[in-house]
Image (cartoon, rainbow, N blue to C red; front, side, top):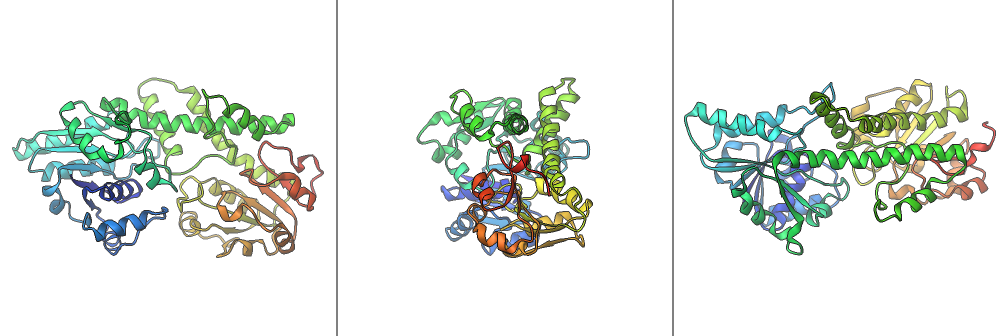
Length: 448
């Protein structure tokens, strides 16, 4: 099939590249000329393991194309995807400015029947809006084309997006006109050869809500485990043991049960907020989901407070940070817990030295300059003269440090492990003050 992908952000680029990789002819459109030129040259503007390789392979096979001109790409397309950003608005709702702009452009340019697919994460009812905008533009032009608008939300994990797309556990498609079913079966046939049941067809509104509901459920599990970890700290229990006991129940499962500094990223915070705004607009109170958000915000503050309680006064203290991105395997720093922790450390007068294998540049760009915040190219470099090490993101290169070297570089020997990556007794036996999340640690010791 000839696929048009409007938007070369994370979702559009992964989707377009993977569809090309199974043989479809894909043209990706973006207004950013600089990004388009970069992509034409085979360079990926975002960090996602394996994505640049897929892009280059399919450019080489002449199956993946990039342009800034929608008018040039649209006439050849069999199906058009909208995969532009829906950032969080000031009130927490999803900003549909870019989605509506693409719908306007499609209505102005379409010269034949078309299936239009909303891939962006959007509130329930957005497909209705897209259809209305396109049809209005067609009426103004005095032309009639059969336009079928469908919902097809993405379920991609940053850091493993290629694997998620190529080996999906389900593909959700929302259709109010089932005559387009064959188009989706042809599009996704290479991904469901082993199980036709992976393609889940439903109405558009149910499809739109499925995306928000899935992310809200995962966010709920994280916030619940973080609150349980707080209780463990007060009871002397071990959240890792509790996690194993809970996750062994087949009705619950083992995923998303890890305690930490709170969730972040481009999806969970934004999607939970959007779902809350949607529920408010329809007079439905989602008390559990509001509590999830509140617990997540509190967890980020609690992470800082562990450091503050240890030192008492943070003025002039040198604090080293490992990890700035919201999770390993990505340079995405949107809503990362590091923003809250760094801001509070700086406000308390600390000197912060940070390292991240991929996210430092984006973090610096988003956070802005501060005279007491600096970055290093190598992980061990931030330790020189530091009085504490804080692990925020569990990148692989941080998992087995040389603790003798760490101790020799640091001026103090305090480690705050916000991802429960290290063995408490190993560090305490080496003379470190060690704090983690919901596990036995040095918290019973007298702070220095």
